[in-house]
Image (cartoon, rainbow over all chains, first blue to last red):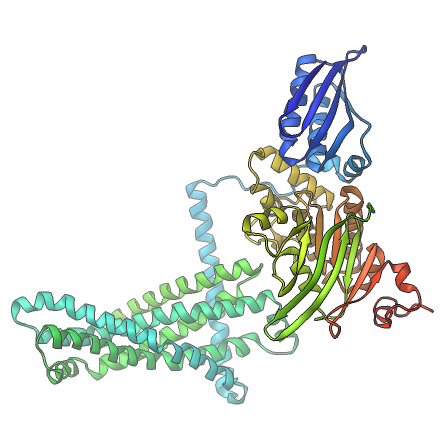
Length: 381
Length: 253
């Protein structure tokens, strides 16, 4: 007879039987943390004795959980493959109960879904290209739906949910004032400071004012404001509509006869299109103010001098073109944000992904649109 | 399995207050080893609040909750986690993690333990999924499963460590009758096979009638338990009429 002891909790006593069998008596506790050891100990005993049959006497087992029973079943399967039969003697009522619960066939059943094999670079690129292409089609289809909904509402203004428009104007516009003001001020400050380092050498301090004004009004004001609003509002729209999709609220709207685009998207579109140009003007003012701080403190300019130079540099064309850009950016932000929300199909985990995608896609489209404007405006002038 | 009368959970004078609102007032309750206890009551009566206190997710405003003889409210984080390893919870909305496959969800409690071979983890996951009739679905994501399958998957996760106590919060909410019946069969089977003490919060009368060894009813106005007993005991005259109306409505006599 020999013993194998797991220092944790169980003991095995093995003895050979006359018919080339091996009887192993288990005493003690076997739980999940001992299951691997039990399996290894039993296999070692079988390897040593090379029996034709194995009997595991469970009469002395004071406790065995499902992992312990599983270890016995796994041993049985392995020994069967080697032509060794196994039986379990004197299991307690508890162990018998666990044995009855375990689906023996299911233990070896392969999963219905295999794990996806790793893809090569070309396959991944190809797959990604197809996904981007399909996504583009979906996004542009949604663009069409938005236009159709807006046209309907222009001809049926009573159908516009004005309370929601007002709500989103406050959320997208008024609540963004502090952050837009602060960032624009800092941007103006930075541009003025960096340009002054060069222009000072030529005694051209006054041109700092013109440079800041033109840069802010023509480009940085609209695009920085749009990016900020995309981060705040495109994500919020995607999260709101995405959560509604997951909770079947969008389906509920449809069953009540409401068009989700008119009901949910148009108020956001209208609100964003109204507030973003105003926010852009506000950002322009703060940007110029930021530059003026550098002008006064670092370049010995007076406020009057600085503002006059700014005013001379900025034309009506610059201002109008920046406002038109802001209008288009606003449409992009609401369109993309809402589209990503409607795209959510699974659970709440997808809402997070949709929110991220809304911001990234909106910023990408903003930059593309800005590039197009740069080319178009160049030829218009 | 229906065990001896040894309490595994003792609720002693539990009071739960949220701001100025008292939801439970000086509740006393014992849950005995191996039994299936159903906690019933109308919406907002405090059933889930009581459950959350027993799991250690809420701390009592007064009183204490002993799980396995240990006061869950005064336990530090390490002791609380040790206590929680002996319990499993099936939440009302399954609470499976959408970014993980079903197999990864079920394996999650095992990953907190050291020294378990990967092959053993995989085998235990297959075993537990097989126990809830989800064998083969380990690589599916929760979004690919029906509501009933997600509930059973969440049950597999809740019992992966063979907990001494299983808690169910409205287990058949949102399930069709067939899935609900399958879940009832699983609850009874697990209780019988693993000897797990089971606490079920539910207002589904059919579930309670089919699985309960003992029932307690909580009433919102009383802020506590108004009746307790086996189904047979609760049918007797003298039991609070609110419970009879809740549990035995439509029965003759």
